[in-house]
Image 1 (cartoon, rainbow, N blue to C red):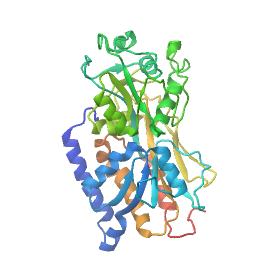
Image 2 (image 1 turned 135 degrees about the vertical axis):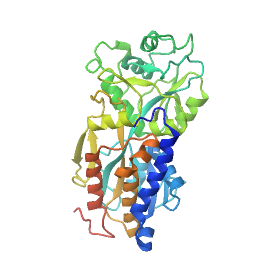
Image 3 (image 1 turned 180 degrees about the horizontal axis):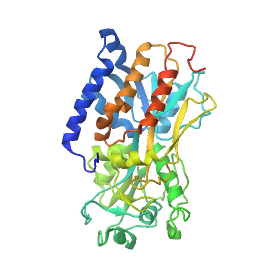
Image 4 (image 1 turned 60 degrees about the vertical axis):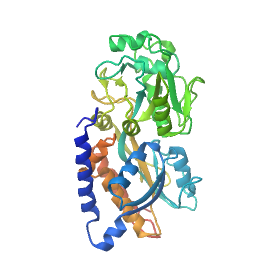
Length: 387
């Protein structure tokens, strides 16, 4: 199913699917239902804020709070067991687009797991005011988006952009790039892609001026002329209010803000929109890895996504990872976490997830994620079932 553009009937269907899912997960005894609906307090990546907002809207009986403070702040809160300032606690889970290294430890010695839950694309959304947008949307070749994001291409009338679209997009309109000013998993995903794709080895013939040299990380050395904004929502709002703007924002936030996004040329030479299908296609080419030193093999990540090779893959795709402790003092949290996994990545929830701008994980990856959570997040007070 393609969600570019999304259709209202898909959203209506997704709500019905979610209702069925909730019935299957929590439609047991009254006691079990109560246990399964408590998730607790999470913090982290803004990419999944739309997921939690929608869950609370269509399933108000589920108890959870989520603070989209960014991947880095969410991970810090999780490992220190200290909620970010102004957010509720205690922290029961975190979300990040940047998987942990595997050597991090939780204050107090608790173990933890990390699992991919949904796929997401990092889109290049733009403000169409003043632009002549071709039918189907603006296309950007690898050279064009590399040049825009390293600050070398400064105007929408640039010959590279015009060549991509068989026409001039604007006579004279300066490009205003909007980037994250906070420490962000989205920045990590984007910079990881640029550090691979914007190099001659990946894109033969790329102009020297467009080669990426700004680093990889949750923060990078952006040109000083770029506009900084906090959170995916902040970037989206800045794009909306700035003529000539383009910026990176996750596929769910882009959809919720009704922003157009460029079709990007992937490694195989095909222009692809950030649809659910194209993001899942990218994930299908990834490699599932179990890793970690503390704990061992309880951390899951998907490798080989920096520059996907499948023909219809969206080129800047990733998974959002959830982190849970292996031991909780309240059985309601354990049941709630398992409910959350079913609602977000269960097979019958795929339409719901996709309607929000995410992509369902490929079935083999779902099996790995649910298996780790079922095995390791399964104890009240301890000892850990995975030690």
